[in-house]
Amino acid sequence: MAELIQETNGQVLIVRLPARMDAAAVRELEEPFAKAIADHNGPVLVDVSKVDFAASLALRMLMMNLKDQQSRGQNLMLFGLQVQIAEVFRKTRFDTLFTIADDEASGIEQLSA
Image (tube, rainbow, N blue to C red; front, side, top):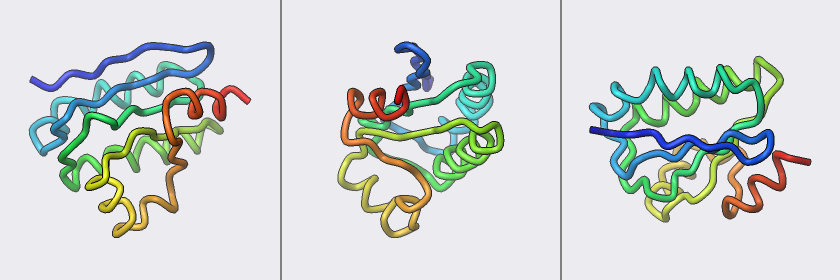
């Protein structure tokens, strides 16, 4: 069973994704992930530091929520990409669409500015 962990730091919602973001996990998490972000009405920092596998559906989930955040005038930033996930982002050019912070502290700082 995949689980989202949510916490706030000031105005920033931090959502922590599980290690395996395969199709089954995405189906389970897609709705609660989108709801948490929509209900927050502020900047979002997504912790992907534990993610060691991301199916294309996981990339779609992130992209859809990025677009939703942008349409609301809000930011969605990622941090903690492992090497293999960063490579997927580079090859798909998702690294040009998302702001990717070096770590949690710098992400919070950028989103709080």
